[in-house]
Amino acid sequence: MTPQSQFTVIAAVRAGRAHALRGLLESMTSQPGTADPHNRLVPFGDFAQLHFARLVLLDDPTLGDIEACGRPRPQLPVYLAFLGDCDGPARDCLADIARRAAAGLSAIFEHCEGFGGAAVLPWMIAHDLPVAAGYVNWVGRTVLQIREEHALQQALVARVDRAPVTSGMDAQGRRRDLIAFVRVEQAAGRLTLTAPTPTPVSWWLARIANAALVMALGLVALPFLIVLSPFLILRLRQLERTDPEICPTPDPAALLELQLIEDLDVSNQYTAFGSVKPGGFRRWLLTLVLVAIQFTCRNVFTHGYLARVQTIHFARWVFLDGKTRVLFTSNYDGGHQAYMDDFINKVAWGLNLVFSNGIGWPRTDWLITRGARREMPFKYYQRRHQLPTQVWYKAYPGLTLINMTRNARIRAGLERTRVSDRAAAAWLELL
Image 1 (spheres, rainbow, N blue to C red):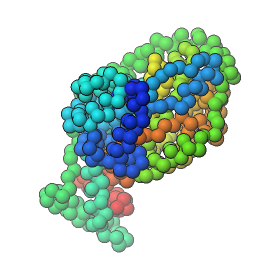
Image 2 (image 1 turned 30 degrees about the horizontal axis):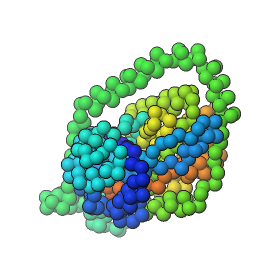
Image 3 (image 1 turned 60 degrees about the horizontal axis):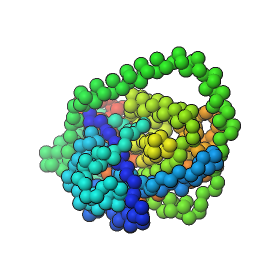
């Protein structure tokens, strides 16, 4: 198994260079917001280990919301974020991209502070921020596997007999014919099904060490949390009653800009940016929540689900500016409204647990109730914090997570030595 990882290269844009940078990023797209996989600057399609990538300007329109908390508006720069989700170590992927797209990356990064013609790879590594929490839908499912299984499914769909299956013997016979067909196609080099690589021992050790450390720290902290819980709950309720709620109707022009880059494929991108509520309580609470999310994403939600949500390919939370702001990004299947409704209906409590620590979130009770359950304030809030993604790349356009799961089942059924009559008929139904 080849585990996935993420890189998050973020740097401040030089004063007065954001407009020129937007124009340069636009030249990388084939349609609004969607990367040309063979663009001249960073030909994302050439990197076989890259699932998703994006280049986005983090120009926060809600920066002044902190004034509602009695704090002055901070003077913070616009950032450029270069994000990727890849097979294998993120540093290896960055090295590959830097080696083959150095000129294009230099043209992009020269708009950022501190670049000045520096060597691309060391500069990216220096600006690669740690991910506070990251989610991978199916750990170990590589770009190569996805593409090969899709090609297999397409070949079998074109070949399979469409007449109804009449008996178990008929189902078994058709399956044998298709297996023979695949073997011929493999021998001719028209189909390839690459065997999974061994899981790196270092990955298992890091996973075990992380789980042990988090659980050990949790056990150490538990007695203190029990003793302090009445005071923490009291403080939380005080803040919940007084924190400002900022959920105006989204600006029509900003909303249109977001909608123009959505629904161009069966999957969409989401980028949100905002400030953490001031004060140490909220900062520490959010930090602990993200530690818990990272733990569960690494050890529990590794095969198709994030809690009850099944439409997210990859997601991440990243702290910026000394944990005063948070970046959230995701790649998901379906339309934006369905994505939001999925969260409201299935894990509104989880949204509240994380995002209620952001300035202006719809008011919650006891941290996890109300909040995102208040549909329109929540939807206004998240649209207001959403940023247009200038360049977004997906390695397998047209494929959803449901498609990938079906294709993996087709391959698994093909590779089994023997199956029952019922299983053979069920396998044919996948085609």
